[in-house]
Image (cartoon, rainbow, N blue to C red; front, side, top):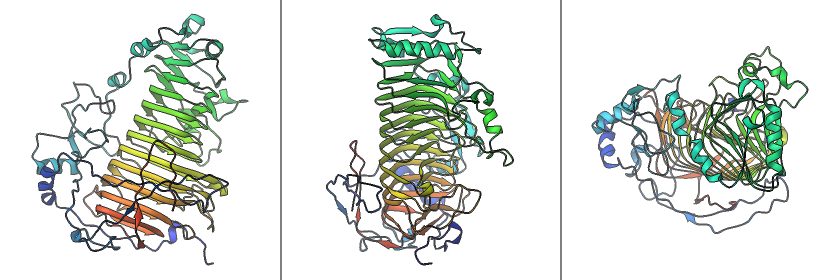
Length: 576
């Protein structure tokens, strides 16, 4: 039986316990570190050997910088397992409070700035905050609401703007339109669209798309404000002769009856494929009307037959794509997905689905490269952002997430598949009341690797499993068998991660016996209990290092010299 992986149930619990913090101990530091300057860090590049790679993947090497900073009083290179925070030298740790920078460009979480530091911290710990307007789209709320105190309810989410404020978070369609004065304008109302949400406008949208795609000059398709197009499953393809812009100022809604998909591909609703230089925006709404799909899902009721449900919006083989200033709600399953795309910019999206809606991932990235997601609010019943098979150079910036399952890489390696994900950077995120925080999940028996991933400047509030690497992922009714092959996880960094955990185990590294996690790096991580209890860490077959203040203390099995990686805009894959 040697070499067989253990199931998650059989882990030997060897995590280290944490301490309960006294607010008074932190009050002085609140005053001292209220500006929350982000920590400086050494930077270097690395490339992992293709030991567990799938095929003939070419790996480009780069320079490396060894990181050998004194820790634990300055003598030892790495923290011993079960080391107490009391033995740590002074470090610029930031209390678990809203004064921390939630995003990487100087924005702060709303707090009662008039309170004394001690009272400020107590308010944060009891989840009582005073909202104030914060520059930027993420926290833009009506001025009439900005002076009200709110108590954050665990059943709801923070940063919930009133419904009347949503339009203020999206760019006005008139401003969006000014850019296209010299283009061919195609208003769907001029071509017979009823726009009442009752009559079927699928053919009109198809005809207008064909005109735009065949035009020799750049085209803009306009769905005007106050128009609501009922659209059945539709395929909008290229290769177009010029650039196409779809300006949605009104709404596009799906049929509410799943039977409409009979005889068609049930995996899709709005399907864009082989379209280069496509731009979609306008400040409107795309509504998947997924309630009937959720009610008949086998995940909602095991008595229901399991069947596929459509992804609301799919972009397949679309290069140099821009999606911005939209609200996407109630997708039948996944809300928006990018597959085999190169060069994608997603910004200023609001993605919403109920917390109980099954498999409603917010933004899903698969087999795509050079993807940037920024300034988005995602509240769904599954992963807010999921990055899966063979994706690389993905940049995620300034995200609000929750409810949902957090920000995930994976799942990878299901059914023995070979999956590769590398060069991923998540910087600036606020997660609230999510079932997971920052997660990497792989199946036993898979092949491939996850490498060169950085999570940085993340604030969490009442999050279960805030930091988790799970190489024993099993989304099945039956127990998954142990396997002697695994997706390799290497060079993963967690930097400046703060917040509160809804579970006692705040950090979980459940790595493979046959392919342990290597190069797992934590710097300035502080996750305390949301219920004033303790937080602990759990480690299995993980190797790595820490810097600065890390709480709960990490239970690495070994400590060695460690290479600190950086994520650049180029595809630099790290290797040892």
